[in-house]
Length: 112
Image (tube, rainbow, N blue to C red):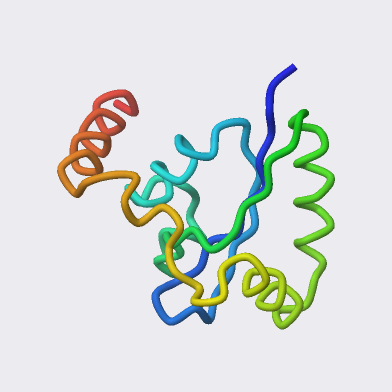
């Protein structure tokens, strides 16, 4: 079975949150940071990883994602601040700008 992750992204001002689930946190965050994650995250520039949890099975992550999506805004902030008090981007050093641009080009080529 595959690992699963549930994650919360935010915008620069930390006013908008997006909750998602994936079997590869690095790949999914790469998609979001490259502007290829989903329409919502692209529209509101929700590209900063605030929080994530790892599960042994993707199904567990999906269940947790559904739970978190029903949470109030303040509850999500409190959850994030328990693990990430400064609300910094946990993936800030995962990719360089050059890697993001190369990924965008690759995905543009694949989408044609």
